[in-house]
Length: 381
Image (tube, rainbow, N blue to C red; front, top):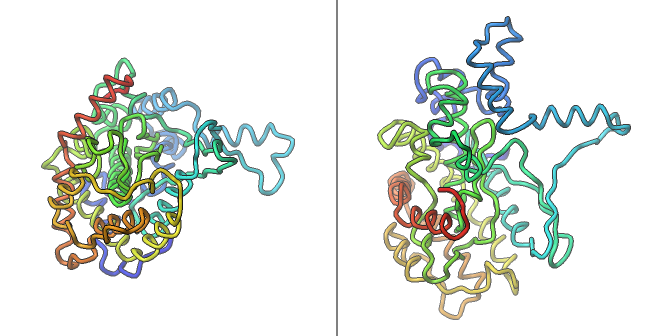
């Protein structure tokens, strides 16, 4: 992964972040950058001497029931059965076929996410996926294996909350597996929070957010980006930097827990700092892609009153406002530039991130949009 020029100024490294998870879990969390460490925890303990408790084995079994056969196991099983499995370069890729849908915008967003993924330092975690536009109204999209949407999880009869889900399937934060899962959760939560804030990603209902078997959050479906949101000028999400619910913070231990007040803010600051170091590349990609583009995210360059109010709330209103006659691409790029806060001194950046987190946490408009999706589309909230 490419490191930014500003890496020397980055917030605490993964080991420091892991240490905040507390007690005996710190060492396990520091090693949790590999997703396999969570899913295979009980099996690995058994292989090292059969010391895995019955409770740990049961938790791994419950994950198998919830997420199905681990993708790595499925790939190996199919490879062995395939007559071409021994060929070099053999691979198995899960794909969704989409019809009557222009996926070019999703391809564009994946380019932006990959740029951010390369810029973000560890342990920040994003999961861009492959998309191929095969025609004006069709395409292939890589499916994210070993995942369930938050909507699907909440529809389960025994599901109580995300916090209970982590406790039931990984153990509490003092256990190695529990600490590793929460480390994965906060690392992905911070990365996607800043990524969706910078790119103006909306329509963040629980059908568009996945949770994998190792505790990572993954955002999908980027039909509303660069400030374009369901509802147009009356969009409920327009005034919210990113989705950060009470339930998500509950996984971190609540609004007063160090994992929320310190670790999440540190990681978000690290992500924003890295994005600022790559601002030229990010803005150039938006401006070039948007030049005479007919993609919906470039359809209009007009700011809504709610978006103007949000920019005023975080102190960036008018920082780099484009001229009235500017093209939609330049307007969108200027809005992203504002969100990058390039005019904010380095020593004030963490304070600005704290404001974003505070504004996003349990935001009334986020809750209202989730309720709207529940009543109109049956999406659990």
